[in-house]
Image (cartoon, rainbow, N blue to C red; front, side, top):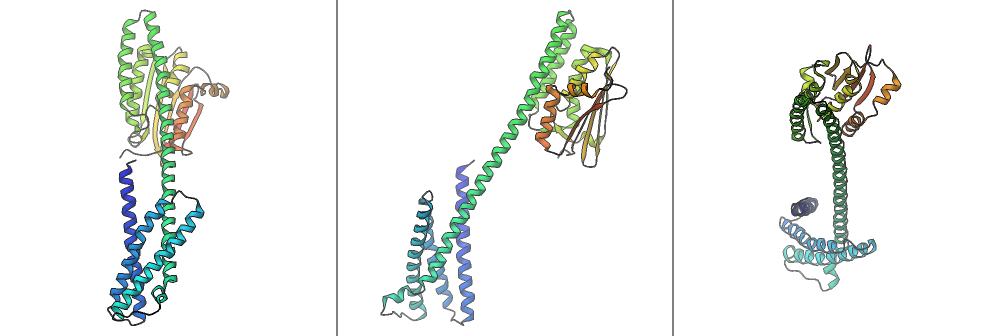
Length: 355
């Protein structure tokens, strides 16, 4: 927070309210004078009286700031004492101005007449003091609320970063393990190709901040970079079909949302099938929701218990946590059976197009 700017804004607010408040007081006094048919010169007396009140309340502000951290009983005593003292001075100034201008220099013999109307002015000063503390406490409440919102936002962003960064070591471990396997079986050319494609994928990953979202089109491009890595390993055994509407491609999604789902499909379906493994990616907009499905043709028939176990990995759990952190209750994440075999991951989230 820029504290200098903060205090400047608060100072400007005080002076704006101070000027507006005393101008309002003068206006009320003037409207009252019209009811009593006072002479035009009375307007000068009203303005001078408002100006005197304006000047007297300025040092009150600094006194109240000085006792701000004192106990409440001290606040009450000081406010009442200062308000009455300021009201007495204001009454003397107001009366002298009135006598000098409106009554051509009249002076009473009894000194108590100098303090007439001081009780009424005391209530005005007391009201000013109460408003000062009310506005001050309201500002503090707003500051605390803003700090709380900032803390929640920072915690939320930290959670998203943690979940997003959690994917990198998980993905790297699996990929490097595959490269190591290729090297062990003397598939150096394939290992080199995989390393090259891995570097491209990681560059894409680092270029996108973890707490920001990207369009589904960019996300699918990232997935295709990842699948290029896997195609080095599986060759013709891996087939990818993408069917996404133009509207869906413009929607914003968390970066690397699909990669762990694709990785899960390859690990539990493609790697375990002896025939060609197929992964189908569908994306479309229905109402105000972006819906994405990832289906594979794994060798296992539908088994609820197996699907449950399959969804317990880091990638799938991480994806659901990220969706929950971003969208609250406005999302769905489900695993179901694909027919005749395999698994379908279905995601629904609010459709938000890129600006």
